[in-house]
Amino acid sequence: MSETILSAKGIKKSFNRNRTEIPILKGIDLDISENDFITIMGPSGAGKSTFLHILGTLDRPSEGEIYYKGRNIWDFPENEMCMFRNEKLGFVFQFYHLLQDFTVIENIMVPMLIKRLPSKEAEKRASQYLEIIGLTHRRDHKPGELSGGEQQRVAIARALVNEPEIILADEPTGNLDRKTGKEVLDYLLKVNREVSSTLIMVTHDPEIASLGKRRFKMMDGELFSTEY
Figure 1: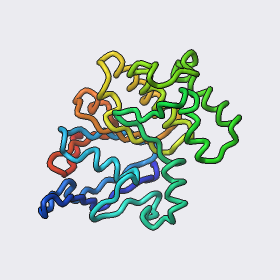
Figure 2: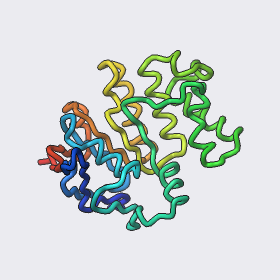
Figure 3: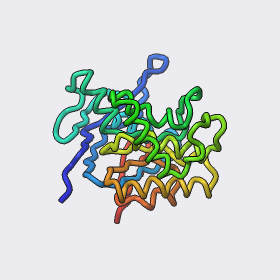
Figure 4: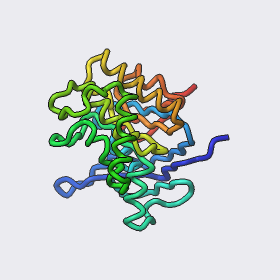
């Protein structure tokens, strides 16, 4: 039986607007196992991206805890939190967030340089991932010279290059046409199968949501299993 790698316990999130508290997440519990592929579907504004950001420590809940292998991540010292975010997690967003002044290979190298890997080793590994995503010929191009699908593939390579245990994907095909979106999705699923990373993906697309090994729907800040 797979070990639980990440657990959300009683996650609530609210924002204050004009002195009025607006609840976004209303007490979510979710246990995530190693090698899971979880999809969370829901309309815009349902809270699914907010929940993903909390799982990835990019945001803090108003209430509730996140546990990594049984440890409360909010108890991590700041340096350990940064290492956890950079080495254990890989983020793929709808908007690619590539560094526009960096080349493709340099963008992929960034997480390894943050990890203080020697530059030559970082470049070698980045080149391997560049080959995996089929963009060796774009190595020295800037993001502005790439198509949307190519930029997303670079973002995926950047997310995977540190070989994270958990990949968090926020509408990764949302800005792409159907054909390109399928290609990008295939890369993510291939990694989930072959690299044995846990994949958590939020989407508004029922077809993509149906691919999850475990499938959930988020409505009005609450999470419901759609498995039968």
